[in-house]
Image (cartoon, rainbow, N blue to C red; front, side, top):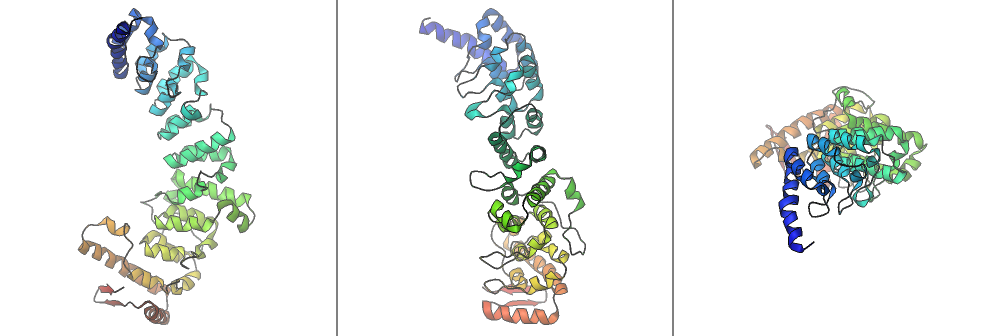
Length: 394
């Protein structure tokens, strides 16, 4: 066929058909297909895109339903230049009705991989399509490597419900590691999972969990991951080997204020709260004060007599909790909640006054004097608290 004729067909037939499929206009699209039936499964756009690719990706249920009557089972297996079937694009778009229509036409489309060998279920996970991902998970057959990849993708995209389901089906996924050698617990520790969670107000020697958090699937996932690892590994040495450095989980969680994560970990293994950062000799309580995370700091009331040791403990620079509370908060932290130097100063003052009162409850007056004198002598800065004003000179 002459090049001019090909261009005419493209402009007069393919382009309008593409537009109709994109808009979901089956009446106009059908008129073109009736006139030229070869267009129903032909590449009508750059990249070998068919009319089904366009309509499925645009989530036009009625259009796809009518088009199924024009196509054969084999037509649903056609791929674009990226290697994606229309079913893969529909999975990414997240329309279950469109997927049902194609699956009813040809059951095998569920198993046909797309670009990079990715199954349709992973297209849904990558786009965060929770309902569709769960719908496609059951009928999809995956080997161990693909399951691990899907599991890690669920974590990275926040599909914690499906991740929990996968973990319940296959406990070995608790030990999966990404390309950086980080486990799922490492990834969750660094995530902002619970910005609205607060520490429960009660006195106890056992770390407890806010009842409201138990309903959140992400914390159920953390609990399941941690309990699985503890059940599989009989000693802390084995846990170290599995998690590389489990203590870094705690400090990463403190840095972002991940109270819910810490509660789940510590409720199953309370002794970890005494863990120190090797580089600073600081516990998670010290880190919480540094980063102004009140809910994590409040855990100090739930560790029994151990709090007496922690409140007087000094880090490698001679700082106690009192000194860390008086020092300026790190940049990019809680001070960003308000704008303006004056308001930030007020926020710091309120934070300091509340924490200093709670610390005084934990410390004897003699301990406060001793710690203050030692700290001031070693640190070469003064902290003055009088008339609701404090000054810090580095």
